[in-house]
Length: 205
Length: 309
Image (cartoon, rainbow over all chains, first blue to last red; front, side, top):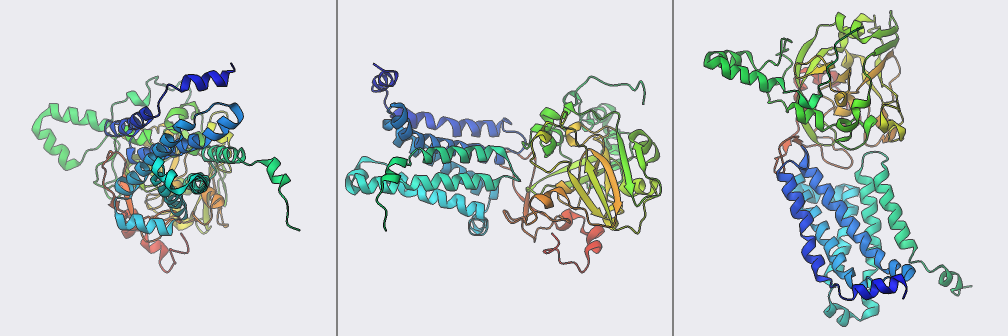
């Protein structure tokens, strides 16, 4: 039995539901740190950035699951829904911290969404996640049919591109970290392109 | 400064003067407390310039020395506090050149000996919307320019930060086109509020992360104008191209006056948040010219501040 097969066999007994429970720990932990001085002297920004980055990382992990199966033969599909929903949850937290603790005014937050391109882009990425989160259940898959459902969930590709751009634009000047994540986005999406099929595709004359 | 005593005690171990002064006041009883209150909480024998000092509560020494923007040591707010101790600040000299009668490399100790050292408690407003209140120690830039015989009819003063990547690890990456450059119009440079800080909290030494050993402080402008660890000052007629303007001219201009009515393209400048207020800190309105309008507004009379941002 190959390594990937033994991993798959072992994972058969590991359910997905603990992910939901564990996912509550980081926001609660960050809040605790924020109230006890563990996030430095400007804890609002730090909390906002940490939970936003964590959400982005979890969404990227969600997008890594199908390439991992395709190239490494390890099947983690069972955990994908939980990861996607957790990523969405963290992005909601990021938004709440931004609006309630950082901007502190609903009208100003709304004005920023319209006026500030990096916030507009971030919000667009979040808006695309809403239908995905709402249809992340068996009932929706049955109702929509797998083809339509899969096509809808390809919106996640646009979300991580928008998230990556939002991250780059949020930083002052040229900084390496957001570009590293943008590189990850490119790799994760690039792994999905079937070059063979692309070249074999019949072209219009 | 041969044989000068050097303490091995780190800045983090130093009790802020405000704290130990208040301990002394407590010990000397209520009368002393009353006197202290009238005189204001002076941090040392260094005279406080009351005319140019805010009565607002200063940020703690720890806050001022832990939360910094000093990209020479990294882009993280805690990078300067972590890595700035690698910087050698003694010996240090400042080259003053351009339109000056006495150009040359001025030893920092010689400059300090010729200057009138005092304390000024200034507000600092960062372009990123955080702010602090800081008790600086230092002297007026105008006095240093006079010392070098600067041509007061020249139009601009240009400043340059040290470039020493082996000690300033942030310079090993081109986050900024090093060395960092800033500039002031001559009338701004000569304004009595424009300060060269060489100390903090009653001490005549600056912690490295705050721009040791000598930095500019222009309290009515966004923090990035207040260039740190200065090695070169040039008096000239051309407007200097300051680093942030070079990097993003649509976001950062030459003037960078604190102005709640002119937004940064990526955020509103109407509000700010004082560092140290915790997770539930309230934002407060940003004041025009950071509250120094009475002193400096006349410098910009007739100028379109939305255009010259």
